[in-house]
Length: 134
Image (tube, rainbow, N blue to C red; front, side):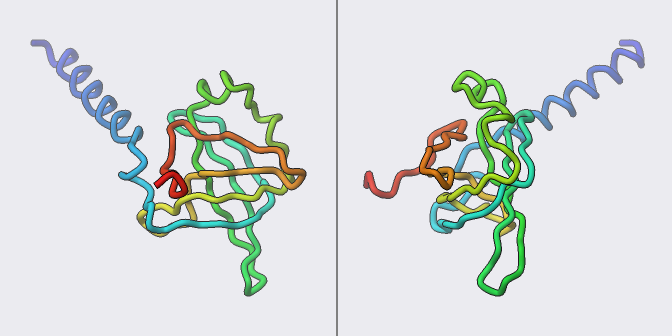
């Protein structure tokens, strides 16, 4: 085999592995034993592959603002449901119930999300656990 062919094959295997690692199951990334619940203001919306993100500024009990990243489905899955960047305006207030990342960072997956006016926002790519169904 020619050296150029080997380089292409190596690069493809490395990039392919990275893509597979980027797509994960709920239990790999999030902890069902670490539920979160908070209200915050949308500061950024990213409809990017493989998962979309909503950045929400949350003011804690100490008065300090902290930004949480809420993971959602792929842009394709969300657009098929009618969700675009314009569906989640910057400055919107969101109420979020979900599960924190296993690494305890300020990242979560939203189980239930709704705007201040009560409209629900389904931002998930895959179903998350439903404790009330157990």
